[in-house]
Length: 358
Image (cartoon, rainbow, N blue to C red; front, side):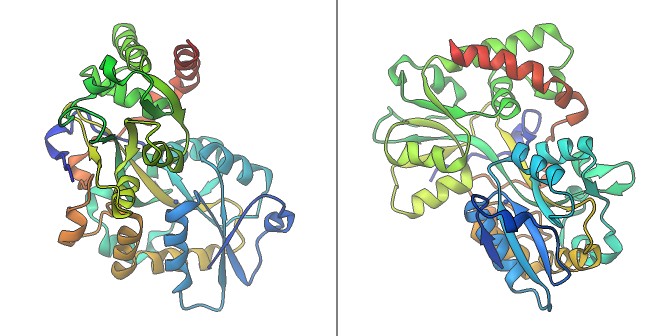
């Protein structure tokens, strides 16, 4: 497996910044409000949801935890806003944390009721800007990874180490990229030698970033919006090169797809984190704090990392975690400045959409 170190590229790394699992479709009772006998959890679905629920299931409490999955950040925020009181705990990526605070749908977390967080999570990861609102802690980092790219060694020539591989005409119609504006542009900026935090309000840097995104679009046959689709493209050989998450690729390799390699390019790659937060209006705040404290026991954090194949910023991480494809301590990551980037998202989305349509 190809492991590219992240510590040397902190100037261009950025974070983007998942009981019982209940599908949303056809389940009106799912959104009927919180109950005194259960906590309601909203997450991303898939393996991360299953792993998180397995940790919740080990909670020694008379209360149960019921999980609901949503398709992404926008859907999560809409569900919370449209169904007040229906959720207690939510998993959000850093994009979601920034948006959720903007929408005022989260409660501050009382860290005195979650002592395991300070006990077991590295200090460098406990005050990330998107998880804070002044002195208030709004979110707790859960796991983090990176968005590099995966490639099929049976289809490409030699080892790929650079974002420039996306531009090779030999791969026309064989490239798939992530369909999330800030994620996509963060990597386009890195490929152009920029940090996306320095791009807003700089016209020349903005043009450079979008010119790179336009060039990288040339070989693309499709953009993917969820990790399962990226892996399907790789598995079925629709994509020879595909932006991807390291944990997903590791799971694919464990299925026997040894011809798929994952790389964090030499120019750098965008990282991300998922975080746990309390939903505003929850009637079960005390129990929700107890559940969070349970989650941040060391053995449960290690279970999360093992089940998700991603880094958890636990103190004294075991060697098995440090061998993950996109392992990186928080201190070796540069995090996105959402105060600068988020106001540009709508404008940049329109501009990127015009590139994709052409």
